Image 1 (cartoon, rainbow, N blue to C red):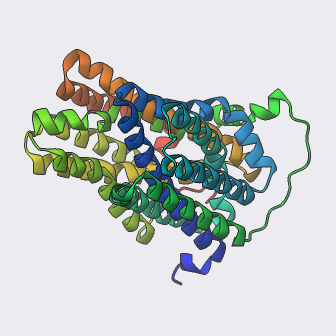
Image 2 (cartoon, helix red, strand yellow):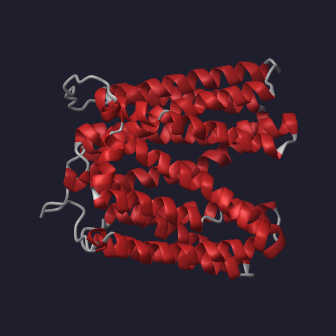
Image 3 (cartoon, rainbow, N blue to C red):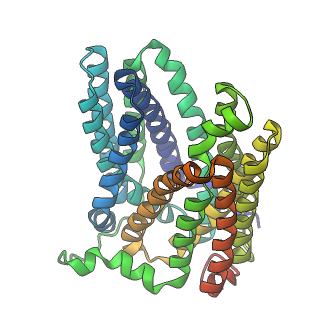
Length: 404
């Protein structure tokens, strides 16, 4: 009997379309805010502050955001976040059109965006398992990842194209996409069973950390993502490779930046059709190893085509690991804990990306861009080998579900 089509789950498809619109809007907004900030200040420091001020609220609000996702309707939380993003976009439209946009305003709104995302990400991540059966979840997550990668590829390109008409035009488009996302989320229906009311204590807020520490499979999956991406990332150094190693212009840099997402998109489409159902632990660690090797190939390559292929492979391998890790975490976590666990996972993901860029830059200042990325690729292989020893149950995991 063929597996059921994902399109037969109406709530999931509405959620997928809502995430697609929201992600595209967010990517466009990030391009416009960064470009506008650089226009105003010509300061690389201020560009860094935009990213930092979006990450810090997620770190500070982890416990509260996870607790809210487990106590309240997750679909309504994400819809409320879309409303808040719409309001931020409207403020940016007014400020840009009225020419009163300033450095201080953009930094303040960056904090607002970080606060919104702190609540949006845990609720979104923990919502998908409520919309499809457990045996369909891996395909659903792969399909969801395909949509997100498409939005990540197309959003910045569309935002840059619209920016020709002015920053206000980009922000107006973002507001429309966020509003569309909110409408789709409000049309989504699923069985929400309010959890028993319990007092908010330090123990309930920290329950996500306690759960992860006790479940070796979940701890291994989440921490593998943190350290593998932290060491293996090369995104921050791509301008140096484009200019000094591969000797290509901005067009080459654009292709290099998009290559991992294209590889990830292709792999997520393949995983939607052919999900990983056997030897998931071995497959995940193999994918991490391939990611590390591809990173090393990129580091030593002086041929533009080979560098593109290496980044494509790294993006595809990372997507295999991401889908397996996300599936394991969601299926191993009971519904009443998914919000708090997803909040911790969101911080780990954010830390790996932000700290990974800092690590790459710091090491590059010491031994150069090629040495930094090469050491990172080797480090990823070392982490994979070490995690196999530290988390043998994860390495030997046969199926995504803990029950036969």
